[in-house]
Each structure stands twice: as C-alpha cells, then as structure tokens.
Length: 501
Image (cartoon, rainbow, N blue to C red; front, side, top):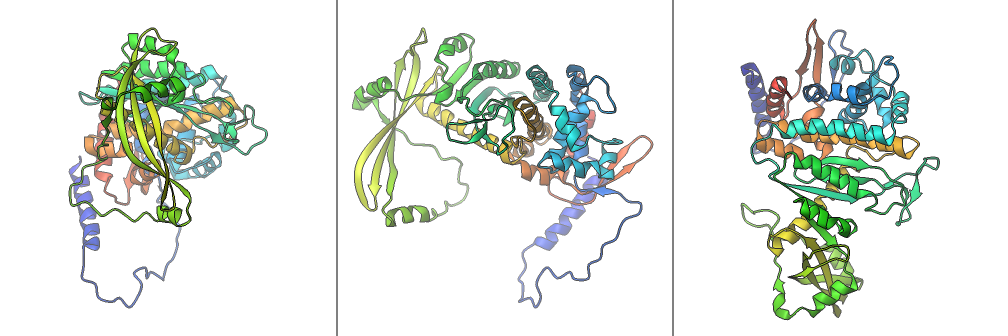
C-alpha cells in the first residue's frame, strides 16, 4: 500500500482511538452532543458523494470481464441508444450497492452528478426504463445472464488459495416472495395462504453465493423443477471443488436421482420423510443400537463462560399454563435403506428426539419424534447430523435476499421479468462475496463474506469521498475513516493488477 495512505490511515486511527479511550469522567454539565451553531453551505467546485466504494466495485466488475461478457451474451436491444445491456444490468445492481432499496431509488443516482462522474457515465437509465429492460427477458436470456455471472464467479474462485472449496456444499431450498399486487402475471396462492411467487434458491454454503435463482408461481411446491438447477450448480462448483455435497430438506430428496448422483461421485445429505415404514424400522431397533447425541458447541469460549440469560418467554408459558414441549435428550442410530426408486441401499441416519410435553409445572406425557437423513457419505453419524443442520444457514442467505438486497420485492408485472430482476439484484449480493474473496487478508475477507449486506454497505460501499476527473483518470478521494479502509486500499491495489487471462 502507498506509504502516504498508510500514514493518513494511521493518523486517523490514532485520533479516533484517543477520543474513544477510557477516561475517568467527571459529571458533565452539558450533553455530549452540544453542537448548536450549525450552518450549511453549497460547495462551488468540490463534488462529493456518499458511496465511494462503487468505484472499487466497478473496477472489480471490469477486471472480471463481466461487462464484455454480458454485452456479448445478451441480445435484448436492437440498437444501443444510448445504453448497452451491461449498462442496464449494472445500473440495477449498483443502485442496490449504493444503498437503494427499490427501482425508484435509481432516480437519486440518476440526478447525482458526482455519482455519474465516478462511473464515467453521461447518464444512466431512469427507473421506468430499468423496469422496461427486465420485461425484455425470456427464460433463455435469464439463463444466459446467470451463466455470464458464473464465468465471472469462476474467475474469482480460480485465484483463491490452495484448498479453497476442497469440500463444497450446495444448498437448495424454496421460499415464498409475497406480493400485494393484483395484476402481476404468474402470481398464485401458496400453501400458507400467501399470494406471491415461489422462488427456488441454489447457493454455495462455503461462500454464501447464490449460484442459481429461479422464479415460479406461488402455488409451486418447494422442489418443483429443482433437479435441473441442482445439476447445473453441481457441475459449476465441480470445476473447482475437490468434492461436492448436495444438501436439502425432505422436499428435495429426489430418490429417482440418488443413484445417478452417487454414480457421478456427488455426495448428498438430504432429509427424508418420516413415513410409517421408516418410523417402524426406527422403533424396531434394539436399545443398544442407539447412542446418546451430544451437540458440539457452536464456538469455543476463549474466556470464562457467561451465565445464561433468564428465559422470560418460557416463564410466561409456564405461568399461563400453555402447552410446552421441552427437549429432554437426543439419540442417534443408523440403518441401511433402499428407497423404492433406487437400485441400491444408502445410509439413513436416525435422530430420535425425546420430548417432554408439559402444561405449567405438570408433565402431561413423553413424546418421541424421529428425523431421518439419507446420505452416501462415510462420516460418523454425529457429523452427518451436524452437516445436515448446517444447511439451515441458507435461511440467512434467503433472508438477506429478501430484506438486505430486496431482490424479492417483485417490482415489475410478470413472473419472468421479476425473475430477471431477482437475478440482477442477487448479483449485488454476489459482488459482496466476490469482493470478500479478493481481499488479500484472508481472515478479514472471510468476515466480509459472512457479513450482513447492510453492514457491508456501511463498511465498504458508503464511504464519503470526493470525485475528481482528470484527462485520463477518475480519482476517488476518501474523506472519512473506518477500520476497513486498510483492507479497502489493499483490495483496490490487487484489483488494479487483477487479470482473468
């Protein structure tokens, strides 16, 4: 990193540390927030904006060859007056990275002269034009766009350290994207009585990236059409990963596909329905077949353990004598089982939960529930259950897509165009992951990859900066300070030297 930058960052860090260091304060006569004589002025020559990280993100997109690939692969515009396909795609993604939450927020970027200067743009599409662009897509175009993004993804993966994705986990799940619009084509009512769409999300657990995203009517069952997207994701990840494990809940146990996946060398850990036959097999097991299951702690306590917080909700349940189910213990067993549509047997791990059903302080009865996991992995049963439960982290990715990048806002009027918007909005989430993977400091990069989207915006994207245009350069002059700037500049230097060739 430039020595001058190191000195500036060090000085800013020292100043803020001095202000925040512990002090023996005396009773203060006035509040800490005491500024009163506040004035506003307009700068005549200096131009600044609040999203200084957008330049680094655009540099990364260019270095990954995404701009050229999108323009080459998508043919949605007969003439470019004045925008290209990549302009529209990046306009929608950058709006989200600049803090926008809906199509209308593009209007703020469109009237921000400094933002336009920072991207070297004379103008950008307005919200209406951006919405019209999504209506030009058909399903084949959306797939072409997703493959463009995957080629850029591979470029990021291939420069990772040795051992990256040695063991990859592909998670798949469906969700419900609610909409109150009554004129949206493809909208339907879900099993929960919610009107909307039923997107399918295939993600990579290791980096939280969205690999594929497909939109479906709200009445679609969770696993509908998922095999095609699982196969595509496994093929994509298999180009880099040492091994690939498919994970999904009971809806995604495609028993007719298990033999094919096993023969191809793909691993799987899938939930299996607790049907009467399997429950009967579990109940018929001898006592010695079961072993107590002790879950490992989620993290290592480096200091003394804290006392557990008082459970106020449970206290209310007991006091009001609601029916309360308390987990008493868990046991594990395993059997060999051949599903009807399979030609061979697979391991089925059985998790038995012993539950005490109570009302107030009184125990009503004991209940036993069985959970089944079918797998072709050879790990111990305890690890299989832990890996299967790890798939639940995909719910956090889905939540970020819904409330972080607002990819499932459904701003346009039909299923396919909303699908296109979801894929482009999910690009903003993936750009966050790619940026984290390219941070030279691996530990800090991993923190960015796992970070929530809104926090990432404040750490990397929403940096106040001055933009200066010269004959050959666009200079982003950072005006503030946060603890991520050292990594920000180190990543920028790496991106400048980055090449996909």
